[in-house]
Length: 554
Image: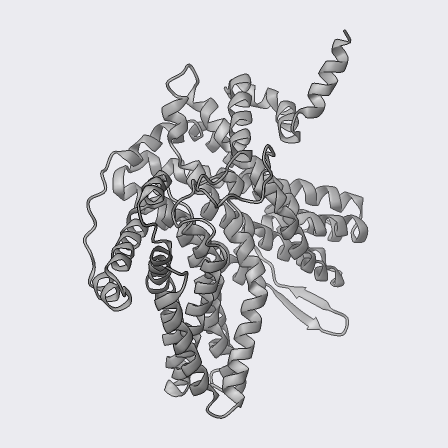
């Protein structure tokens, strides 16, 4: 029998990510990882991801029987399609400008995806409980977990950056293309490494409930910092000649904290030649990469051991706030719906994984309109009819978080509790979905929309208060439609899985165009047609009354 033929056939069946990991086996071994064990764990994790299915009757997905499909990889083409819009950067013959916008976009996408979607996987301590009892070192378990997430993160990065990578080979040459691929992959490793180091540091010094809160707050802070950095980087450039698309950049060592510029500096050296600032930024990039590698080597194996601290504190029965009690009485139309309302409110209050998945994205969605608000305020001190319209658009940004909310409410660490619902004599799915939607509307969307609306009212006066009320009522209807669209599964009935980690992010990107069209039509319609806002108010009140009473069926 030709054994070499069997080996070749087996090699062809080996997934590409395992082949790539095999190439890095000496590196894993050098840092103290048992590569054979790590590869086995990694293969098992990826197999489980492919086999993730819903277990509720009548709610199966579109995957055919016997087929193993990883939904994450199947959805990456959407990101590639959206990133095609970045090709407009190549109309400017300035590499630093092109790749500053590119890396700002890439790092925003990576950090938001890492913090909002993969943190629940990174902070899962089941590996230590199940595998740690065997003769497997913590460093090997940590390396398997990091590689597991790294496969998804690198795949996501290549999908997002593919259009610009290909365009770079065409417009800027072969050397620039290779450099871009290398630095793009490096940015993904930076994201993963910084996140692991952040959690390892927090886990080292804190435990219990305080630790959970610090992790949640740190994720929100990093999300805000990344969006703020994106805004500040935009202030470095100025188009000084619109006809020739000439761009001027004011870059100095004072901008060294904007580390996306570190990834851009090598392109400045490649196009413009020697420059002190570019050289120093490039050295910062090299030094930062070495520092992240050293810190991960020192702390990467400790995170799994310290994860046990998350279980040291018991969650106390949550007391009901005045807001919860009053809104439950107002919006809970039946005793059953009120019970589901309180259940959802307390679950979203106490479940760390829900907060980890949703809150960083909400913080990012909030910071964009705030920057636009203060930018318009600084640019023109007097409120005119022109910038008045801009202010009225800002509250609609809150709708961009609706897809994330719809996805986040599908998952829970206590997903096995769905069997109680499944086996109950009366499966009141309609009241359950209505209660969940109402909680998300009051607890998440109302504070977001209300805060931005108050700023708008302060600047424009109460003349447009009816329009702002209409905006919230419209957002309520859109939330119902999105929850209805994604409501094939019961709320909180699915397990967190890496293969489905990008659902909310992808939905938000797709959702951007409908939100833009809706907000444009609403603002224009109510601004230029007399008394139109009152007609819209009546229609929206009717629609909201209907879905709050009869939406989702019985």
